[in-house]
Image 1: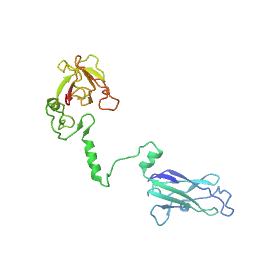
Image 2: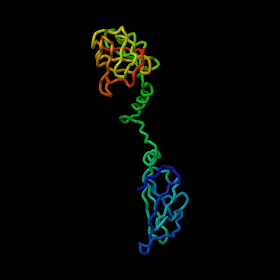
Image 3: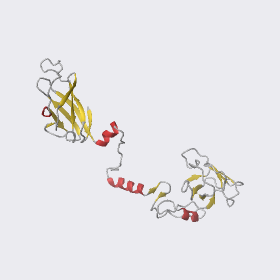
Image 4: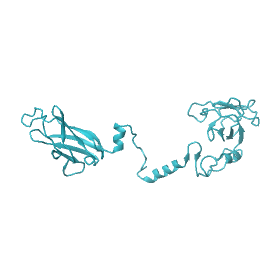
Length: 262
């Protein structure tokens, strides 16, 4: 079966072999096959349609080809081409017309569209999902969502700005403590904070460090170790986990917020 691109001109298909109607073996290489000799059954039809234009041309050894146009391939689904000309046995070719984007994903460089039109048999859920995705900021969070403000001394919720994403200014007022990178050579998995931070080892372990500004603004990681004497934060989890190192090193003087319980 040959798959054809819907409503597309210029698609060549082979027909044959055409052999002599008397002995059923001799190749017929000189047949004249016109458009009226080529009849097409389309999916769902109760009759045959004549090929829209042009006949068939001999290639070699009794095999011919014809060129289908956009009218011939307009109907989706199974399609059968019948040819019976004087002097030769009848020939048929089974095809299937598929949507253009599906054909392109199989035989060309396009990608198959996978948009969610329905979820659980209804389009409402898919529409809601699309709306939510449109309001999401890849670096900040979900816009228009009112979460409870974090109370001092408790993890609480994260404030969301009207413009979308994490409201870093509001978060600075409600989170446990703010700090500044104070390190001449900070790394993605380890850097020093400012002198105002605690001198107690491990006091911030397990808390969430969220950057307020700089290239890492809005990004967060869970602290795996803290050294009080040097104010050093360490992030040493496995890649892809919440306590893995940041994707890149912060800059000296970038500010951050610590969220969680000590």
